[in-house]
Image (cartoon, rainbow, N blue to C red; front, top):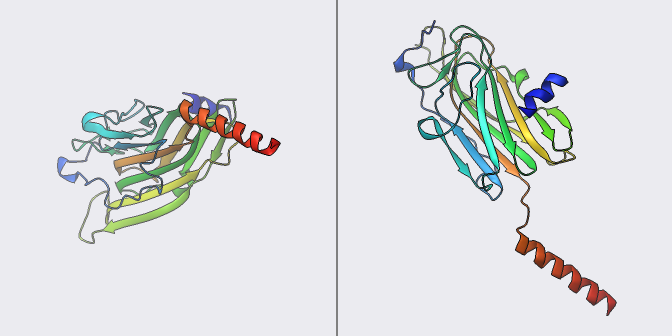
Length: 231
């Protein structure tokens, strides 16, 4: 994977009754659903460690307004994780280390990520977005925390303590990056074991390239403008 290569260069105690209810407060990007965007939603997982999790069928869904120009997969590289019977990704024996990789056929200009978890909280210092460009550029940027909320239950017990669920979202602005951004990696760690990843969604915004007919009209407009100036 291009982003992974770029960065390189620079138990099972969860029972079925602990299933969570996806997002309690999902904050969508202002540009969600517009032309040139895609929305990928992971609601259950197939691979606990190292394998790709895809968002299709019973595992989630994709809303594509970018003409098939985006592809997304989610990985956990932390040790000791399991996929619970609820479909959640649970860090039974260690901290979760979540990587969400995306590839684009057009220039990515914005990313917005929502995450729903329970148990051990996430590590805010681990949040970041890596990117590469078609001309070999690469970088790592921090995100803007759009919103965070937690629900608590004083009567709860067990490894999760009092926290029953958390929802948070981050926004990344890539519009000022030179070059065409064609691959992305969103990173998130938990602070320790016993985090349950319930759902993750990622919105990607790309620069909209005019269709050939629109380009032809722009060309005619330019010709008309030159003729007016000559007159």
